[in-house]
Length: 601
Image 1 (cartoon, helix red, strand yellow):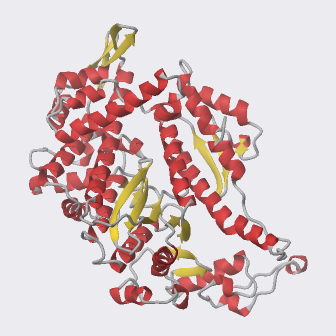
Image 2 (tube, helix red, strand yellow; image 1 turned 90 degrees about the horizontal axis):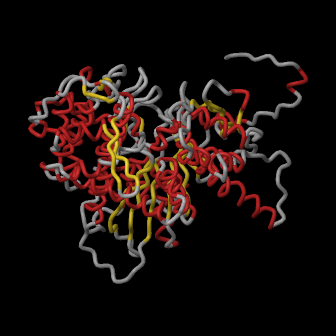
Image 3 (tube, helix red, strand yellow; image 1 turned 90 degrees about the vertical axis):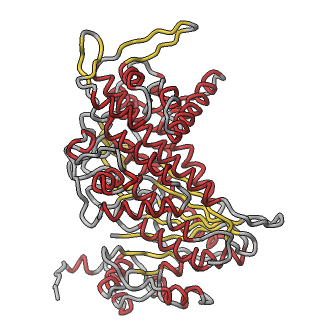
């Protein structure tokens, strides 16, 4: 055993260790004395015994073992399903799932299972286990095959997950799944909502990372699948968007992943023809990245027409129209229309924006199609009110060597979830104790992050100012930093001492994060060429036609807002759309009974 020697003056201030604090009990709240050290050591001792779950009352701490444990069998599931109270059994994720179902049945109130933790802590796997338990517990009560719900996972992972520096299968988006029940606990259907797909990953990744799994699933499978015949796929190094990053992810079998994806797509209602169209679009996005431009006089010209021609073939569009979409900008002044040639740099920016918007809308189209399938049923529930169990799996708190706008928005969502946790677990408990005259410990303390949310998400906050820059002619990222300093420079959560050449740091509840603001204005605008809806409307591919219509509807709605004199910039921007969807999510969570799972690695 390791012996630690401390000065006598430090020993005097340390609390005595209780025997039960070092044995690894099920529930930390059962300890006579509870403190941070006791909680951490309890979880550590249990983990050393291959017990990955620990309770803090009805909050579940889940430690990622990074290996499979035989604790999710049907027999184990039955044990929790049949329990009168999950607290009578050992801590388990099935216990939280049981609690949500039981409380829904007993109270008729909506329930929310909130899964949080840093990247790679096991949130997505935890969400799968919750879904597995809930759908199995009500098996046969619904009007359709409950396994369809679980088949959404391979689809979402293929198109929304990627390898990062910390996690080989990281969700690069957040998702909220609503399971709808009748008052008699019949499963009526479900719907998925996605948040902030990291579309910047389409065009580039860090050297230790790689792009979305679907890219490599297609390229690995290639011509061996009839669904991919005629795509003329090449090795990853032949695609500019995949160069300079990893081609394989340890523990990820791309060939097997493609097989599971096709099975899942078929299970949730996608025909072979629709699957082929999806894969053609993905191949087209990769090929589009190979279009390169050079300046010829005062305008951009393709260095090689072959990638553009091949992209047009895959998208089923006119090659000339595709080239003009990337290299010419339409200017409308009153009734006059002029065509302005772009420089090579601007053409490449337009190319990447087109790639991102097509991939991002393909992801949304897939989710809409799955929702249509999962919501279709033959139940007739005579006017009874529907109740929900929502499961949240959102990207965990992130702090990398280089943190950009995506990390700020991810961390903002985690700040909101932390505030919800504070309000539910701490503030309400304190208010109850005070109203009942119960004395509170003098050293009771928790991190209140209200000021952080005001800095990031409030009026004249970091993201508000970013949206304001959309209306500033010839705005620059450096100018944005100057504006942030001017408006929020004295804020205690904004760490001016850590300012780099183009960035700032935020003191989050989970720690300090330095942000590099390079390209934030461009990322926030994420403006595809104005001709994109018209370009895709002319496609021979029905999926692309629908995507083009969706992009056109977005542009039309934003134009209507602007014409009406409302602040359209917040609606049009990436940050604005994310903040609006995040507000809706927090609204849903706030009206439901919460069940917390804290994932740790």
